[in-house]
View 1 (spheres, rainbow, N blue to C red):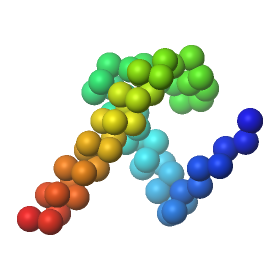
View 2 (view 1 turned 90 degrees about the vertical axis):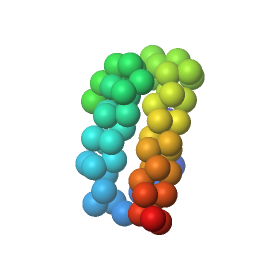
View 3 (view 1 turned 180 degrees about the horizontal axis):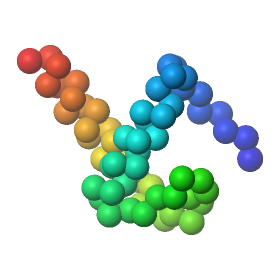
Length: 64
């Protein structure tokens, strides 16, 4: 399976991975550094949703 999701800023890859792992811990999902295909849709959605929520909060804080 090929991956089509390319980063706008490739240098941010490591920071985004740390952010993803932090978000997963916060919602109680155990992510591995490699393959995570055994996650349920609910678990993956919880991680992604938490990441978006935190990004929006950070952006709103910057607007103040």
